[in-house]
Image (cartoon, rainbow, N blue to C red):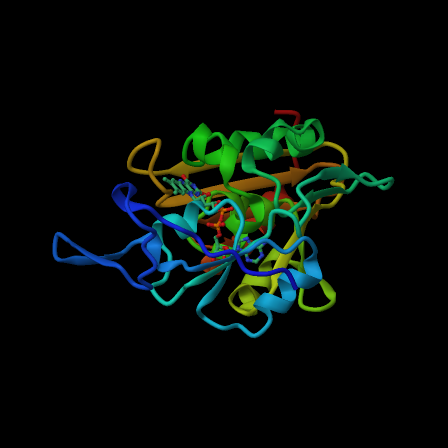
Length: 264
Ligand SMILES: Cc1cc2nc3c(=O)[nH]c(=O)nc-3n(C[C@H](O)[C@H](O)[C@H](O)COP(=O)(O)OP(=O)(O)OC[C@H]3O[C@@H](n4cnc5c(N)ncnc54)[C@H](O)[C@@H]3O)c2cc1C
């Protein structure tokens, strides 16, 4: 295993601050600063990352884009495991047409990839346009987004597209997103390594809508609908915002499927 690197933080340009929990009081609340991190690992391979994360020690956290951890790092965390070398960022299309998105792919890379952009009439870039800002999307990764399991525009869309994830726990397991959240896998020690978008039937259309206080805010509610006309049973209506509670609206799906579809 490679030697841990100690982060030197230089508040005010002075000596490195290695106090484990430098706590600020702000408006009556408590903010733990990033100087709480004293050890930073950059494992070159997945096995090395898993060896550091497998115990589930609450002081040790994986980091991908770091946009969530930077603003909401639990106070007990002192060690980060950077996944940027251990987990792929490539987006590939298999011989069968399935799209595999490496978990380190940024949201920008996803929205700009031609196969992802064309998938299901372009609902992924349509949705990603609303996630934070371009600067945020340039940094945050699909893996970090899914593992954090908080307010999300991404999850309802991926559920509507029947997306699956691969998680690593010494070996690889492939799960639907509903299983991943429904069975609490996202809260167990694991490394999320890939997202899979299966081929959809021909004549598939999809749409995404969100409601938020301002364009930059997190969603209060959102919805993704996907209809595959060539296969009348393939109707997905997912109402969401909070991954663990994202719901397929089975009753609405059945009503839509029973009415058939016209060209509009
Ligand atoms: C200002 C702001 C605005 C935002 N607006 C929106 C919005 O409008 N809509 C929306 O849907 N989202 C929004 N987000 C959420 C944003 O999309 C997430 O912060 C981001 O996707 C997290 O990705 P990351 O790579 O930075 O995760 P990180 O911060 O690196 O990690 C997040 C969590 O996942 C764990 N982790 C990371 N990668 C892996 C992995 N591969 N395997 C296992 N564990 C892992 C980390 O330990 C951590 O607990 C916003 C965020 C910010 C900061």
